[in-house]
Length: 344
Image (tube, rainbow, N blue to C red; front, side, top):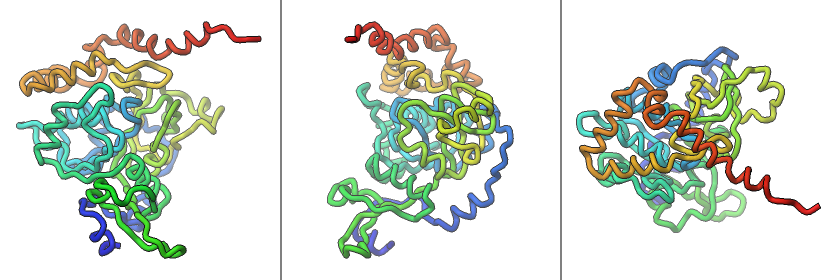
């Protein structure tokens, strides 16, 4: 496999796809239904270690685990690897940890989608970090990085993929080419990825870690099952009785989860489907202050390093009054549709 891969691609492989090592880890992981609720500060302190491989859940600007990423920066974690699957504001937050005098939070990044905040434009600081050469990069597509998590969740060292070879992205990835034992044709394969720790923001969770997600979940089903440790933040902390009343809505089961953090409005300033819309004004503020280093550092000091946690950050940006405005924006299409007359 390694010889074949070396002929096909030149990107670094940050974590070996060792099934036996992963199996040993998951075999020893506690699986009891115990109360896992804790503060974000405690969760990050206990489960995010320097040098870990970190993978975020959500999709683009949806379901960003903002509070957890702020805390990772606040605690000055160092030398993390990162899965930039569909990363937008979450990657922008973590790049704030790559500043002179604060060390190097990000060291290695598997790229699929980073730096851009979709229609909002590019993050000037994230772009500086990437272009500086201070972090090591390996390129993937959104699909192939998702496929790596799926392989890990399945417990296999790799999965085949078509439509990837022949591209510059393939060349800069750590993918390989093998001969199919059935057709004798060459096919691309991508290695499994078992993150050390994942962070996923969900709509509902009980104290044990059974979680519900509304709207698109993208790769979070596989991410939760591939990650060695999982921190969940949730909009609502609900009872286990409520979970049991509708068990088929449980996307992430308790035995995957290590920490449950109750963080209402925890995706802010990102979008939370069916709950509140993204705060476009505040996201533009982030992009604006990043253009000038002194303004960016002052902004970070005021909103992250001088605050005790997400609640304080949230209040400084309008709190519940602002969320009510964003909630009206998120629910507006439904309200308009309700007013449209239907033919009998």
